[in-house]
Amino acid sequence: MTPASANDGLAPYFERYGPAYRWLVITTTMMATITVVLSSTVVNVALPDIMGVFGIGQDQAQWMSTGFLAAMTGSMLLNAWLNDAIGVRATFIGSLALFSVASVVGGLAPNENVLTLARVAQGVAAGILQPLAMIMIFRVFPSNERGRAMGIYGIGVVLAPAIGPTLGGWLTDSYDWRWVFYMGLPTSVAGMLLGSVFLPGRLGTDKPRRFDFFGLLLLTLFLVISLYAVANGQRNGWDSNLIVGLSWSGAVLLLAFIVWELRTPEPMVNLKVFSISRYAAAAVVALIFGAGIYGSSYLVPLFVQTVQGYTPTRAGELLIPGGLILGIVFPIAGRLTDRLPAYAMIATGLFIFGLSNLLLYDVAVDTSFWRMALLVMLGRVGLGVMMPALNAGALSVLPAEMLAQGTGTINFVRQLGGAFGVSLLSAATEMRFAFHADALTTTQTASNGTTLELINRVATLDGVWGVPGTQSMAGALNYLGQILATQAQSLAYGDGFALVGVVFWMGILPALWMRRKH
Image 1: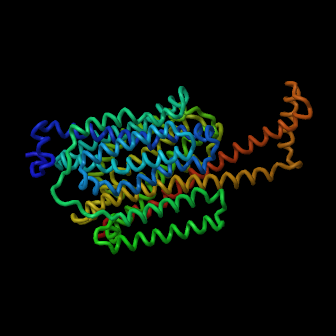
Image 2 (image 1 turned 90 degrees about the horizontal axis):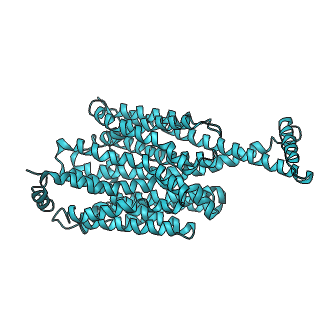
Image 3 (image 1 turned 120 degrees about the vertical axis):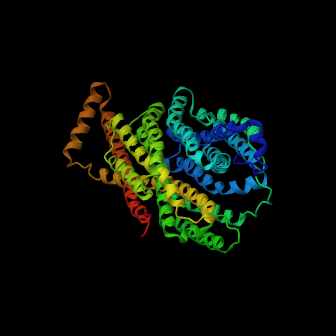
């Protein structure tokens, strides 16, 4: 008997393809997942080139990551309703088609605004596609084979971010940053072709439930307004009328969303799951997890390119060891999750990832490639240890009737953490850069012997190379300014890594709260 024998949607496929149909489903959904994972990681490698081409700063460039994550956060809640309303096949193919069109628009974008809109459209498609793979794997595999299926499926999920940044860096160096947006097109087209053959229409025969569009509107407005306030706080001033007004508006919209979801009969996010304290603790950890993994993935390639002068290819190579070690640790941690308490695995992972970021506090221009790579690897070990245990620990405390809502909600919270994590970390880095630049500048006075010696030596060298005396001093002062800016950037990025480390260590407290009470 197949898992779909009682389900008219899947039974014909099992009759046609037999047990091999399960692996055809994994192959099909993996095409979409690889496309999505590639898109969420490779653009970070090309950001410095994009900033240079369009003449924008980090505060504007981070919207390409934040907009993608925010759109993915909101749209992933549409998946279940779309599967019921138009069917799995149409949802899958339509989302990949939207992603493909957005990729082409991003590659042809004439300015940063069009590029950001293309990233948002990619995020919408990615959010709809992300839960679909899990749904189909659970539908076609019996319970005693799902672990093996998830392990095989996870190989593609892990290898995409390991190989993607390197390939994206090579394309950026050898051709142009625009080619990065075309990377996902082959797997996207392959996914559409496979989906048209191997994915069913509607899985159930029941009438689709009413979707909470008003709740989605409130959530979208909250995300857009709040993230805009965080992204532009440093530029406009955190105490400016615009930023204060937007912050209060975001708070009101969040409160309205919570009230609405508690009162509506068919909520988009079932907030009642948070009444279970151990699940609520797991949700806090998921929020921190999302912020940390996306925030650090944003900071590392930006630091090595803007401060250390790495090429995009070299920056991508830096991330390969971490991706590969994650692929090794992930299945081992999955097996350990069945034997060890979830809270212990999660707390251990939080500690390791936090430690790796705290050790990056003193990064500088001369920090070696392998020191950076090893610390990134250490962080990925921490993530690999806690990833399987987090979902298992969260869902194990829920009654059976709340499992579906709990699964969607924990994924939503993790993505929400990612959206705000990138934006907040970018803002914090900008603030610390301004602070360190001011602090270093005030020390460059006539009484600073080291500064005077540097200026005189550089001016002398300029004179040796034939620079007129009227220009040699200006050149020396310009060189001093570049050194100060680089040092301020290094200190700011170090503060950003330390912030991630401290927040992850703080997350150990809610992780310990997940411990079963006797």
